[in-house]
Length: 225
Image 1: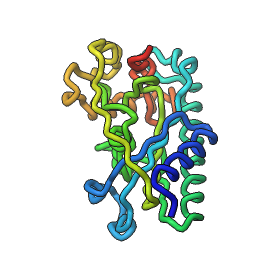
Image 2: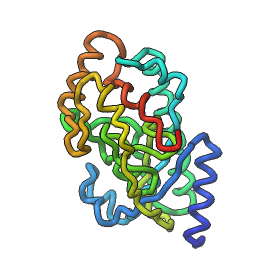
Image 3: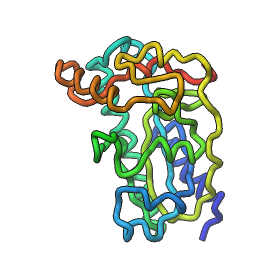
Image 4: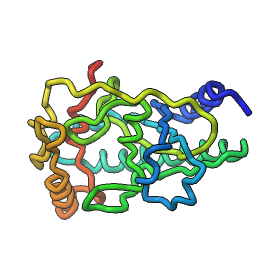
């Protein structure tokens, strides 16, 4: 069995070579019962590999008060890239004799709660990739919220990263720009219902063919910007 640090380094390099921008590992042994998956599936699973890919700042720059068709297409393609990376990673892990299950980058199971099989952003925080911002999204120091995430659940021996402990800067630009008025000064006050209503409105108006916005994603550029 390869040393944990060796497995980590090889899987990270593989992910970055495939086009990923971020890689981290979270210890899920204490939280996996909350996942929307069968307990039997998760019985031997204790780690989550979190992979991130950056969204194009140039494409996002046109998302001023509503999503654009260009952003909608780009959003789907980045999700597809991440799903392909996750599938390749899972196959690589399985060939080594371990368990691995890739969780789709963008698959909603419960629209009212806007939740999937797992919370990619929460796992991203646990994997040290960033923190949850006022916009209720993962915020990375380098990319802000201009990124997408995917997760691979596994039992391959890996060192876990330390959870992120940073918080949003005091800019509050996402609060000012949110077209739904869903983002508040206090992170805990984010209103998912108002956010979802605005996404549905954009969809009804045929602006895009999926429930996305992107306004707060565009203005959240990270602390290093």
